[in-house]
Length: 148
Image (cartoon, rainbow, N blue to C red; front, side):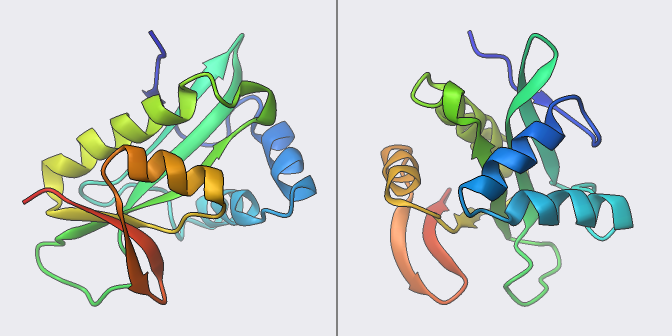
């Protein structure tokens, strides 16, 4: 069983993860840490959560759920957004990304009618589509999963 747990930054391993992501051309983990430190996004609004998976005390996968910031504000919020998903390269293709996504989807179903995301690459898109996400034509998202 792959343990996915709620996390709060900083955690051991986040700096190594940021460096790896940066070397692969992904800057969204920099944004994750900067926004957490500034208080701009701590995944603490109703329905929001930041999760991770650890190996020997080091973070090897991370992903979060926010109220979708790219849509007009609704009361109550109806659309969540999965963000900042990253699995360390050495840990890919072992089911960790799938387990993390399943946890975030389960959390999203508690508060939202749908969840959106942006797939950063073909492999990510394949994972998301295998979990029921469908491609959409939107400037702010590539995929959506409706719970209705």
